[in-house]
Amino acid sequence: MGDQIPSQVRIRTDPDDNYGHRYEAIQRAKDVFDVGNNTGAVIAACEHARRDKQGKREAMTYLARHVGDDVLEEVAERLSTRSMPVETESTVRVGGE
Image (tube, rainbow, N blue to C red; front, top):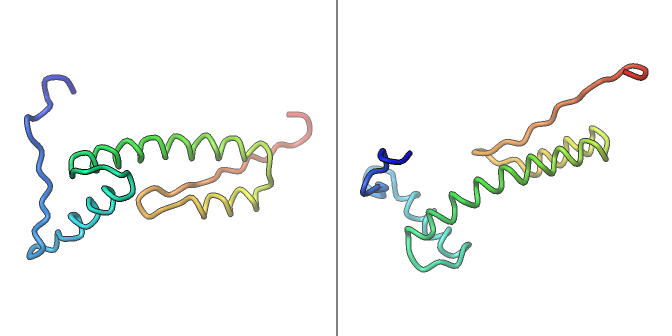
């Protein structure tokens, strides 16, 4: 990013343009992450999303080696969200390959 970072970023929250849900989401993030300002809430939520994605990837990789496909599918379904789906892959091996 470097020199392409803007000096200011704004999030539209105008309820008349159906953006009120954005303000509500930021307020919920303030509560969840126990921060006192909107900027801190957005930064905490973004960092959490990054780490959450990595953690889910690592957990699914681990589980794929230790549980059956049915359990793996169930865990993937429970960890999935609309904005971050978790998917599984099955590998079929024949013999000692």
